[in-house]
Length: 100
Image 1: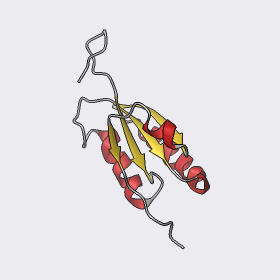
Image 2 (image 1 turned 135 degrees about the vertical axis):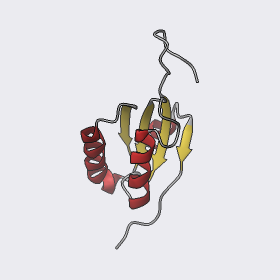
Image 3 (image 1 turned 90 degrees about the vertical axis):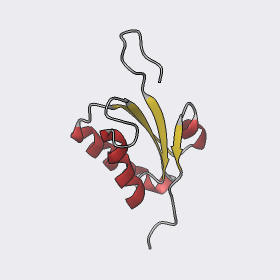
């Protein structure tokens, strides 16, 4: 991974689709904690969700923020494909039909 001018690693951008769903929700916390890319790799979570689920996604982002994960360098919440995938190094394509 590339390093910043101070020797620290640059954040890796990880896109998760269906981020407010049950599976996406579980993945986000594992990624932010370092379980996916390692205990010293900062990440920016790029979370994609359908428009009707954006309020739920905002709640998920608040929970991630409350956890104060030291590796979580940022979050991008969006319902737009271009914004979610632009600049991403990893993409976890999770999603399904919402429960009825």
